[in-house]
Each structure stands twice: as structure tokens, then as C-alpha cells.
Length: 219
Length: 71
Image (tube, rainbow over all chains, first blue to last red; front, side, top):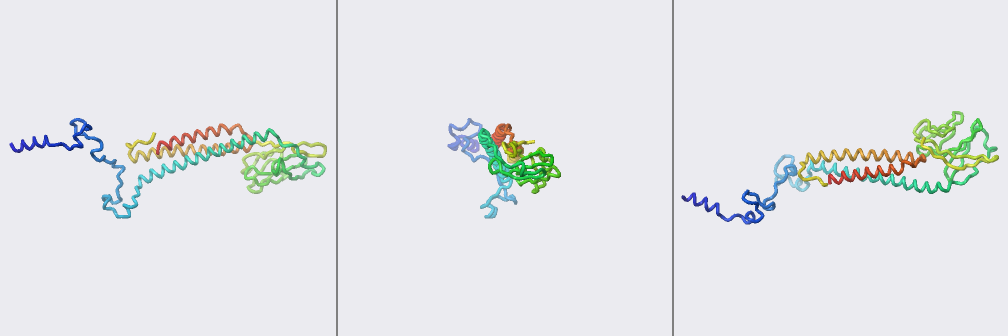
């Protein structure tokens, strides 16, 4: 009889006010979310290497709790961030080329004026000379054995070393990295240069040789 | 859309590795674009400059979207 009474008293005993509230969802035993501490995801609980509780770990480890799996995650994430910065730098580089392209187009509207660079009488067949065109760009003028005139920028398209003529072989040679260009066309024929040499357009007026323009090419 | 908490740590690591692979591929593509554009521009060919800038910007936007996903 006494046991039965205790059971009834227990059932009608005051319920914890935090649970017995409007937020309590019926009689299913669920309670408001903030009543109990949420269970942490086991993945997010850091364990010491010896699996003892955190309070039993040495002081230095508690002061400096590196979580290696989390560290791997964060390191990869930071690496992605760094790569995105690199990606932004590439776009900035492309924008720089586009801006320079606009400037170049404006400059092309006023082509460089014709400039006298040499005299035919002072340049016998099988010889070469240097000149600067359009402003201070170093260029090379070649008078080959057949009497043809060729003029190119002297800056190698690889790393801008000065090219030198090898007339007997019909080549222009860059001595820095053994790059070769064809004398007649200026095209890169061997070595690291990626493009032909810019060609200087020439005009012969009487005995005078004039440079009248620059032609850049990709092939 | 930020990553939801219900991913386990191992799953998050897999997602980040996948994103990392995509970003690396896109950055390599951008590097190739930049070198090819520079070569063409130095050779006097300006027709590729603006399309290349657009393509590189699209790669950057994709990268930013992927970065946002894992943060």
C-alpha cells in the first residue's frame, strides 16, 4: 500500500520548471533545446594520443591543443585560399596585358616616322650594322651576299639578348641560349626563342636606307 | 552555401580535397592562358587578349565560388 502511494506521489511530484513549460513538446519527453547540453559530434571531440581524458593530459598539451585531423582540414582550406589569390593574380596579369594592348593600339594610330638608318654605299654586301628604331630599340641591318637588305629587332624573343648575324650560314644567332633565327624571314628555327624577330620595314631612296615601320609576328 | 555541420570530419576532408583538385586545375588553366596570351600579344596578335581575360575571370569566379563553399 505504501509503495503504491509513493508511486502516485512520484508521478504527481513537481516537474522541473525548465521542462514543464510551454516549450515542452507534449509527453514525449522532449524538452526545449537549451535545457540540456547538446551532445557533441564524436568527430569534433579531440582526444589526446593516449586517449585519456583531456583533464588528465599534461599542462603543455592543454595549453597547446593541436588537433591533427582538424589541422589537415584547415591547412587544405588555407591552401585553396592561397590558390584563389594566385588565380586573382593571373586575372590581374591578363588585365595588364589588355591595358597595354589598348595603349599599343593608340600608339599604332601614330606610326613611327621614317628614319634614315644607313647608306647603301657604306654597307657593302656581306656586312651588317646596328641602328636604333623606332625610339631606342636596338636593331640589326644586314646586307647579304645576294644584295638583299634585311632588318630585324636585335632583341632575342626569348630573353632579349642581342642576336648576332652569321651570314655564311644564313642565320641570326643568340649566343645566350643558342637560339637561331632564319636570316631571310626572321623566323625562329632552333633553340628556345618562342617567336620570330620583329621585322623592320625598309625603304631605299637613292643611296639612303630608311626604316619605315615595325612588324611583329607570332609565327 | 556554407558547409553544413552534419558532415563528419572525414566527409569534410573529402569535400575539401575535391574542391582543392578543381581549384588546382583551374589555376593551371589560368597559367596556361596567361603564357599563351603573353606570347600572342608580344607577337603582335591582339585578338586573343580580351577573350583570354574573360576566360580567366570566369575561372576566378569559379574559384571564389568553390572557396566560399568550404568556408
